Image 1: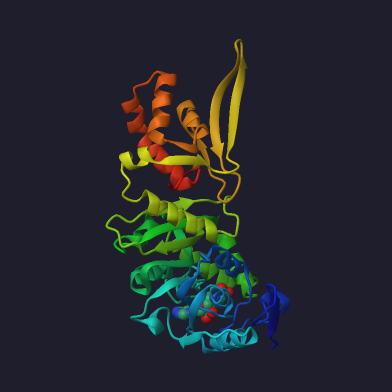
Image 2: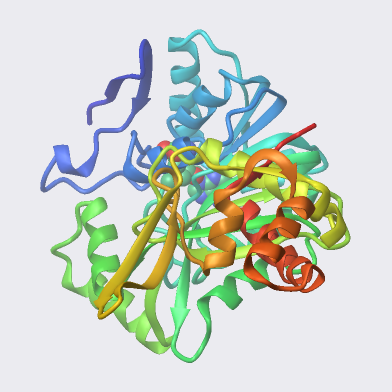
Length: 390
Ligand SMILES: C[S@@+](CC[C@H](N)C(=O)[O-])C[C@H]1O[C@@H](n2cnc3c(N)ncnc32)[C@H](O)[C@@H]1O
Protein backbone atom coordinates (compact mmCIF):
# COMPACT_ATOMS: atom_id res chain seq x y z
CA UNK A 1 0.00 0.00 0.00
CA UNK A 2 3.04 2.27 0.45
CA UNK A 3 3.85 5.03 2.84
CA UNK A 4 4.55 8.68 2.30
CA UNK A 5 7.57 9.95 4.16
CA UNK A 6 7.80 13.62 3.36
CA UNK A 7 10.70 15.92 4.13
CA UNK A 8 9.05 18.95 5.65
CA UNK A 9 10.26 22.36 6.79
CA UNK A 10 14.01 22.74 7.39
CA UNK A 11 14.73 19.31 8.78
CA UNK A 12 11.49 17.55 9.66
CA UNK A 13 9.92 14.35 8.38
CA UNK A 14 6.19 13.64 8.28
CA UNK A 15 4.75 10.16 7.88
CA UNK A 16 1.36 9.80 6.18
CA UNK A 17 -0.45 7.73 3.57
CA UNK A 18 0.17 8.18 -0.14
CA UNK A 19 -2.40 10.71 -1.49
CA UNK A 20 -5.10 9.70 -4.00
CA UNK A 21 -3.45 11.86 -6.68
CA UNK A 22 -0.33 9.67 -6.51
CA UNK A 23 -2.17 6.36 -6.85
CA UNK A 24 -4.83 6.80 -9.52
CA UNK A 25 -7.51 4.15 -9.81
CA UNK A 26 -6.96 2.78 -6.31
CA UNK A 27 -9.49 3.69 -3.62
CA UNK A 28 -8.23 5.25 -0.42
CA UNK A 29 -8.21 3.32 2.86
CA UNK A 30 -11.18 4.27 5.09
CA UNK A 31 -8.63 5.34 7.71
CA UNK A 32 -6.41 7.11 5.19
CA UNK A 33 -3.98 9.36 7.02
CA UNK A 34 -3.73 12.74 5.37
CA UNK A 35 -0.34 14.16 4.41
CA UNK A 36 0.34 17.87 4.11
CA UNK A 37 -2.76 19.06 2.23
CA UNK A 38 -4.11 22.52 1.53
CA UNK A 39 -6.25 22.60 4.68
CA UNK A 40 -3.29 21.33 6.73
CA UNK A 41 -1.24 24.30 5.56
CA UNK A 42 -4.07 26.75 6.18
CA UNK A 43 -4.27 25.59 9.80
CA UNK A 44 -0.49 25.71 10.21
CA UNK A 45 -0.42 29.28 8.88
CA UNK A 46 -3.39 30.43 10.96
CA UNK A 47 -2.18 29.15 14.32
CA UNK A 48 -1.03 31.75 16.82
CA UNK A 49 2.62 30.91 17.45
CA UNK A 50 3.24 32.43 20.85
CA UNK A 51 4.99 30.47 23.60
CA UNK A 52 2.51 28.49 25.71
CA UNK A 53 2.70 25.90 28.42
CA UNK A 54 0.19 23.38 27.06
CA UNK A 55 -1.19 22.79 23.58
CA UNK A 56 -3.66 20.34 22.10
CA UNK A 57 -4.02 19.12 18.51
CA UNK A 58 -7.48 17.59 17.97
CA UNK A 59 -7.51 15.08 15.08
CA UNK A 60 -3.75 14.91 14.69
CA UNK A 61 -3.50 12.51 11.72
CA UNK A 62 0.12 12.61 10.56
CA UNK A 63 0.97 14.75 13.59
CA UNK A 64 2.06 17.76 11.54
CA UNK A 65 0.11 20.31 13.61
CA UNK A 66 1.56 18.81 16.78
CA UNK A 67 5.02 19.09 15.25
CA UNK A 68 4.55 22.85 14.91
CA UNK A 69 3.05 23.09 18.39
CA UNK A 70 6.21 21.41 19.69
CA UNK A 71 8.19 24.50 18.66
CA UNK A 72 6.33 26.85 21.02
CA UNK A 73 4.46 24.73 23.58
CA UNK A 74 6.16 23.11 26.56
CA UNK A 75 3.74 20.15 26.50
CA UNK A 76 1.86 18.84 23.46
CA UNK A 77 -1.16 16.55 23.55
CA UNK A 78 -2.58 15.12 20.32
CA UNK A 79 -5.72 13.06 19.83
CA UNK A 80 -7.33 11.07 17.07
CA UNK A 81 -10.30 8.74 16.72
CA UNK A 82 -8.19 6.58 14.39
CA UNK A 83 -5.61 4.33 16.05
CA UNK A 84 -3.99 4.00 12.66
CA UNK A 85 -3.52 7.79 12.52
CA UNK A 86 -2.08 7.78 16.03
CA UNK A 87 0.58 5.29 14.91
CA UNK A 88 1.54 7.65 12.08
CA UNK A 89 1.63 10.56 14.52
CA UNK A 90 3.86 8.56 16.89
CA UNK A 91 6.19 7.86 13.97
CA UNK A 92 6.31 11.56 13.03
CA UNK A 93 7.08 12.51 16.64
CA UNK A 94 9.87 9.91 16.88
CA UNK A 95 11.39 10.88 13.54
CA UNK A 96 11.69 14.47 14.73
CA UNK A 97 12.79 13.81 18.28
CA UNK A 98 9.62 15.28 19.82
CA UNK A 99 7.53 13.81 22.62
CA UNK A 100 3.75 14.21 22.66
CA UNK A 101 0.99 12.73 24.72
CA UNK A 102 -1.07 10.76 22.19
CA UNK A 103 -4.67 9.94 23.12
CA UNK A 104 -7.32 7.93 21.35
CA UNK A 105 -10.99 8.92 21.18
CA UNK A 106 -13.78 10.99 19.70
CA UNK A 107 -13.15 14.74 19.52
CA UNK A 108 -12.73 16.15 23.03
CA UNK A 109 -13.67 12.95 24.93
CA UNK A 110 -10.02 11.90 25.55
CA UNK A 111 -9.24 15.26 27.21
CA UNK A 112 -12.48 15.68 29.17
CA UNK A 113 -11.95 17.91 32.21
CA UNK A 114 -8.53 19.16 31.02
CA UNK A 115 -7.62 22.64 29.84
CA UNK A 116 -5.01 23.94 27.42
CA UNK A 117 -3.45 27.30 26.57
CA UNK A 118 -3.75 26.64 22.85
CA UNK A 119 -5.99 24.22 20.97
CA UNK A 120 -5.71 23.74 17.22
CA UNK A 121 -7.71 21.46 14.99
CA UNK A 122 -7.95 20.67 11.31
CA UNK A 123 -10.93 18.38 11.92
CA UNK A 124 -12.89 16.32 9.41
CA UNK A 125 -14.96 19.37 8.55
CA UNK A 126 -16.51 18.24 5.27
CA UNK A 127 -20.25 18.95 5.14
CA UNK A 128 -22.67 16.26 4.03
CA UNK A 129 -25.33 13.78 5.09
CA UNK A 130 -23.30 12.52 8.06
CA UNK A 131 -22.04 9.25 6.62
CA UNK A 132 -18.40 8.39 7.17
CA UNK A 133 -16.51 6.74 4.36
CA UNK A 134 -13.11 8.34 5.09
CA UNK A 135 -12.28 9.31 8.63
CA UNK A 136 -9.87 12.12 7.68
CA UNK A 137 -12.71 13.84 5.81
CA UNK A 138 -16.03 12.82 7.38
CA UNK A 139 -16.90 13.50 11.00
CA UNK A 140 -20.08 11.39 11.02
CA UNK A 141 -21.93 14.55 12.10
CA UNK A 142 -24.77 15.79 9.91
CA UNK A 143 -24.23 18.99 7.91
CA UNK A 144 -21.87 21.48 9.55
CA UNK A 145 -22.54 20.27 13.10
CA UNK A 146 -18.87 19.60 13.89
CA UNK A 147 -18.13 23.34 13.75
CA UNK A 148 -20.87 24.00 16.29
CA UNK A 149 -19.77 21.08 18.46
CA UNK A 150 -16.19 22.36 18.68
CA UNK A 151 -17.47 25.85 19.54
CA UNK A 152 -19.60 24.43 22.36
CA UNK A 153 -16.64 22.43 23.69
CA UNK A 154 -14.20 25.36 23.58
CA UNK A 155 -15.02 27.06 26.94
CA UNK A 156 -14.32 23.79 28.76
CA UNK A 157 -11.00 23.24 26.96
CA UNK A 158 -9.30 26.58 27.46
CA UNK A 159 -7.26 28.01 30.30
CA UNK A 160 -7.87 31.67 31.16
CA UNK A 161 -6.64 33.71 28.18
CA UNK A 162 -6.35 30.51 26.12
CA UNK A 163 -6.89 30.35 22.36
CA UNK A 164 -8.63 27.74 20.24
CA UNK A 165 -8.43 27.72 16.46
CA UNK A 166 -9.98 25.35 13.99
CA UNK A 167 -10.98 25.04 10.38
CA UNK A 168 -14.66 24.75 9.61
CA UNK A 169 -17.10 24.54 6.73
CA UNK A 170 -20.62 25.89 7.02
CA UNK A 171 -23.67 25.73 4.85
CA UNK A 172 -25.31 28.70 3.19
CA UNK A 173 -29.00 27.87 3.32
CA UNK A 174 -31.55 29.60 1.07
CA UNK A 175 -33.33 32.33 3.02
CA UNK A 176 -30.87 32.20 5.93
CA UNK A 177 -27.95 34.54 6.69
CA UNK A 178 -24.83 32.31 6.81
CA UNK A 179 -23.09 34.78 9.13
CA UNK A 180 -25.90 34.63 11.65
CA UNK A 181 -25.90 30.85 11.46
CA UNK A 182 -22.18 30.70 12.26
CA UNK A 183 -22.42 33.45 14.90
CA UNK A 184 -25.05 31.29 16.60
CA UNK A 185 -22.39 28.65 17.31
CA UNK A 186 -20.68 31.01 19.78
CA UNK A 187 -23.72 32.44 21.56
CA UNK A 188 -23.41 31.80 25.26
CA UNK A 189 -19.82 30.49 25.10
CA UNK A 190 -18.48 33.72 26.65
CA UNK A 191 -15.53 33.55 24.24
CA UNK A 192 -14.20 36.26 21.96
CA UNK A 193 -14.59 34.94 18.44
CA UNK A 194 -13.26 35.92 15.04
CA UNK A 195 -14.56 33.85 12.15
CA UNK A 196 -13.07 34.41 8.72
CA UNK A 197 -14.79 33.05 5.64
CA UNK A 198 -11.97 32.55 3.13
CA UNK A 199 -13.70 30.67 0.32
CA UNK A 200 -17.19 29.77 -0.88
CA UNK A 201 -18.03 26.86 -3.21
CA UNK A 202 -21.26 25.85 -4.89
CA UNK A 203 -22.50 22.32 -4.08
CA UNK A 204 -21.38 20.79 -7.37
CA UNK A 205 -17.81 22.12 -7.09
CA UNK A 206 -17.72 21.14 -3.41
CA UNK A 207 -18.79 17.54 -3.96
CA UNK A 208 -16.44 17.24 -6.89
CA UNK A 209 -13.54 18.54 -4.79
CA UNK A 210 -14.06 16.05 -1.98
CA UNK A 211 -14.78 13.08 -4.22
CA UNK A 212 -11.60 13.84 -6.16
CA UNK A 213 -9.72 14.05 -2.87
CA UNK A 214 -10.52 10.40 -2.16
CA UNK A 215 -10.18 9.29 -5.80
CA UNK A 216 -13.94 8.82 -6.33
CA UNK A 217 -14.69 11.70 -8.69
CA UNK A 218 -16.02 9.28 -11.26
CA UNK A 219 -18.64 7.72 -8.97
CA UNK A 220 -21.95 9.22 -10.25
CA UNK A 221 -24.06 7.62 -7.49
CA UNK A 222 -22.01 9.14 -4.67
CA UNK A 223 -22.14 12.51 -6.35
CA UNK A 224 -25.91 12.31 -6.88
CA UNK A 225 -26.60 11.23 -3.25
CA UNK A 226 -24.51 14.07 -1.86
CA UNK A 227 -26.04 16.69 -4.14
CA UNK A 228 -29.55 15.39 -3.31
CA UNK A 229 -28.81 15.92 0.36
CA UNK A 230 -27.72 19.51 -0.30
CA UNK A 231 -30.85 20.04 -2.37
CA UNK A 232 -33.15 18.60 0.28
CA UNK A 233 -31.59 20.91 2.90
CA UNK A 234 -31.69 24.00 0.65
CA UNK A 235 -27.89 24.31 0.71
CA UNK A 236 -26.91 26.74 -2.00
CA UNK A 237 -23.23 27.09 -1.12
CA UNK A 238 -20.63 26.00 1.40
CA UNK A 239 -18.25 28.38 3.15
CA UNK A 240 -14.70 27.47 4.21
CA UNK A 241 -13.16 29.32 7.08
CA UNK A 242 -10.94 29.77 10.07
CA UNK A 243 -12.41 30.04 13.56
CA UNK A 244 -10.32 31.73 16.26
CA UNK A 245 -11.62 31.82 19.82
CA UNK A 246 -10.15 33.31 22.92
CA UNK A 247 -11.18 32.93 26.53
CA UNK A 248 -11.20 36.48 27.85
CA UNK A 249 -13.68 35.89 30.69
CA UNK A 250 -15.68 39.00 29.83
CA UNK A 251 -19.39 39.70 30.10
CA UNK A 252 -19.44 41.22 26.62
CA UNK A 253 -17.22 39.09 24.39
CA UNK A 254 -16.42 40.30 20.88
CA UNK A 255 -17.93 38.32 18.03
CA UNK A 256 -17.04 39.02 14.40
CA UNK A 257 -18.01 36.82 11.48
CA UNK A 258 -16.53 38.24 8.29
CA UNK A 259 -16.35 37.34 4.65
CA UNK A 260 -12.74 38.03 3.73
CA UNK A 261 -12.44 36.17 0.45
CA UNK A 262 -9.52 37.26 -1.75
CA UNK A 263 -8.02 38.94 1.28
CA UNK A 264 -6.55 36.14 3.31
CA UNK A 265 -2.84 35.80 2.65
CA UNK A 266 -1.15 33.14 4.74
CA UNK A 267 0.42 33.04 7.23
CA UNK A 268 -2.35 34.56 9.31
CA UNK A 269 -1.20 33.58 12.81
CA UNK A 270 0.42 36.92 13.69
CA UNK A 271 -2.54 38.86 12.25
CA UNK A 272 -4.95 36.87 14.38
CA UNK A 273 -2.83 37.32 17.50
CA UNK A 274 -2.61 41.08 16.83
CA UNK A 275 -6.38 41.27 16.29
CA UNK A 276 -7.02 39.81 19.73
CA UNK A 277 -4.44 42.20 21.24
CA UNK A 278 -6.28 45.13 19.67
CA UNK A 279 -9.57 43.84 21.03
CA UNK A 280 -7.98 43.72 24.48
CA UNK A 281 -6.87 47.31 24.15
CA UNK A 282 -10.31 48.43 22.99
CA UNK A 283 -12.22 46.47 25.59
CA UNK A 284 -14.00 48.67 28.12
CA UNK A 285 -12.44 51.83 26.67
CA UNK A 286 -15.19 54.41 26.43
CA UNK A 287 -14.92 57.49 24.21
CA UNK A 288 -12.94 59.31 26.90
CA UNK A 289 -10.32 56.60 27.01
CA UNK A 290 -10.04 56.68 23.23
CA UNK A 291 -9.65 60.47 23.21
CA UNK A 292 -6.81 60.60 25.69
CA UNK A 293 -4.72 58.06 23.77
CA UNK A 294 -2.16 58.87 21.08
CA UNK A 295 -2.11 57.00 17.79
CA UNK A 296 0.26 56.22 14.99
CA UNK A 297 -0.81 55.36 11.44
CA UNK A 298 0.14 51.86 10.25
CA UNK A 299 3.41 51.43 8.35
CA UNK A 300 2.87 51.56 4.61
CA UNK A 301 -0.70 52.83 4.93
CA UNK A 302 -1.95 54.01 1.54
CA UNK A 303 -4.45 56.62 0.44
CA UNK A 304 -6.23 55.85 -2.80
CA UNK A 305 -8.15 58.63 -4.41
CA UNK A 306 -10.63 58.88 -7.26
CA UNK A 307 -11.24 62.31 -8.70
CA UNK A 308 -13.03 63.83 -11.67
CA UNK A 309 -11.74 66.77 -13.64
CA UNK A 310 -14.17 69.68 -13.56
CA UNK A 311 -14.02 73.31 -14.63
CA UNK A 312 -12.18 74.19 -11.38
CA UNK A 313 -9.74 71.31 -11.61
CA UNK A 314 -9.90 67.93 -9.86
CA UNK A 315 -12.96 67.23 -7.72
CA UNK A 316 -12.36 64.37 -5.28
CA UNK A 317 -15.06 61.68 -5.53
CA UNK A 318 -13.74 59.06 -3.18
CA UNK A 319 -10.88 58.57 -0.73
CA UNK A 320 -9.98 55.14 0.51
CA UNK A 321 -7.46 54.08 3.12
CA UNK A 322 -5.74 50.82 2.22
CA UNK A 323 -3.48 48.50 4.19
CA UNK A 324 -1.16 46.84 1.67
CA UNK A 325 -0.39 43.72 3.74
CA UNK A 326 -2.20 41.09 5.72
CA UNK A 327 -5.93 41.30 5.25
CA UNK A 328 -5.48 44.29 2.95
CA UNK A 329 -8.32 46.19 4.55
CA UNK A 330 -9.74 49.16 2.70
CA UNK A 331 -11.95 51.84 4.18
CA UNK A 332 -13.68 54.72 2.47
CA UNK A 333 -13.22 57.83 4.57
CA UNK A 334 -14.20 61.48 4.58
CA UNK A 335 -11.73 64.40 4.63
CA UNK A 336 -11.96 64.86 8.41
CA UNK A 337 -11.05 61.24 9.12
CA UNK A 338 -8.32 61.50 6.51
CA UNK A 339 -6.89 64.50 8.32
CA UNK A 340 -7.12 62.66 11.62
CA UNK A 341 -5.26 59.62 10.29
CA UNK A 342 -2.76 61.83 8.45
CA UNK A 343 -1.93 63.58 11.73
CA UNK A 344 -1.59 60.34 13.70
CA UNK A 345 2.16 60.46 14.30
CA UNK A 346 2.03 59.43 17.93
CA UNK A 347 2.78 62.86 19.35
CA UNK A 348 -0.57 64.39 20.27
CA UNK A 349 -3.42 62.83 22.21
CA UNK A 350 -6.45 62.39 19.96
CA UNK A 351 -8.33 65.05 21.95
CA UNK A 352 -5.72 67.68 21.02
CA UNK A 353 -5.66 66.53 17.42
CA UNK A 354 -9.45 66.95 17.31
CA UNK A 355 -9.23 70.44 18.78
CA UNK A 356 -6.89 71.49 15.94
CA UNK A 357 -9.16 69.85 13.37
CA UNK A 358 -12.24 71.57 14.81
CA UNK A 359 -10.62 74.97 14.26
CA UNK A 360 -9.35 74.12 10.79
CA UNK A 361 -12.69 72.73 9.62
CA UNK A 362 -14.88 75.12 11.60
CA UNK A 363 -16.79 72.47 13.56
CA UNK A 364 -17.63 72.21 17.26
CA UNK A 365 -14.99 70.14 19.05
CA UNK A 366 -17.56 68.28 21.18
CA UNK A 367 -19.46 67.22 18.10
CA UNK A 368 -16.25 66.01 16.53
CA UNK A 369 -15.19 64.14 19.66
CA UNK A 370 -18.52 62.35 19.93
CA UNK A 371 -18.40 61.22 16.31
CA UNK A 372 -14.73 60.23 16.53
CA UNK A 373 -15.13 57.54 19.23
CA UNK A 374 -16.66 54.72 17.15
CA UNK A 375 -14.62 55.69 14.08
CA UNK A 376 -11.35 55.53 15.96
CA UNK A 377 -12.35 52.22 17.59
CA UNK A 378 -13.04 50.79 14.15
CA UNK A 379 -9.76 52.08 12.71
CA UNK A 380 -7.87 50.55 15.64
CA UNK A 381 -9.69 47.22 15.29
CA UNK A 382 -8.68 46.99 11.64
CA UNK A 383 -5.14 48.17 12.32
CA UNK A 384 -5.19 51.41 10.28
CA UNK A 385 -3.98 53.23 13.36
CA UNK A 386 -2.43 51.81 16.51
CA UNK A 387 -2.36 53.28 20.00
CA UNK A 388 1.07 54.41 21.12
CA UNK A 389 1.73 52.90 24.52
CA UNK A 390 3.05 55.45 27.01
C1 LIG B 1 -8.40 16.58 8.05
S1 LIG B 1 -7.50 15.39 8.97
C2 LIG B 1 -6.26 16.45 9.69
C3 LIG B 1 -4.98 15.76 9.99
C4 LIG B 1 -3.86 16.69 10.46
N1 LIG B 1 -4.17 17.27 11.75
C5 LIG B 1 -3.61 17.80 9.46
O1 LIG B 1 -3.78 18.96 9.79
O2 LIG B 1 -3.21 17.46 8.34
C6 LIG B 1 -8.63 15.09 10.32
C7 LIG B 1 -8.12 14.14 11.37
O3 LIG B 1 -9.15 14.01 12.36
C8 LIG B 1 -9.31 12.65 12.71
N2 LIG B 1 -10.70 12.47 13.15
C9 LIG B 1 -11.78 12.21 12.40
N3 LIG B 1 -12.89 12.14 13.18
C10 LIG B 1 -12.47 12.36 14.44
C11 LIG B 1 -13.14 12.42 15.68
N4 LIG B 1 -14.45 12.22 15.77
N5 LIG B 1 -12.41 12.65 16.78
C12 LIG B 1 -11.05 12.83 16.70
N6 LIG B 1 -10.38 12.80 15.55
C13 LIG B 1 -11.08 12.57 14.43
C14 LIG B 1 -8.96 11.90 11.46
O4 LIG B 1 -8.58 10.57 11.76
C15 LIG B 1 -7.84 12.74 10.88
O5 LIG B 1 -6.60 12.31 11.35
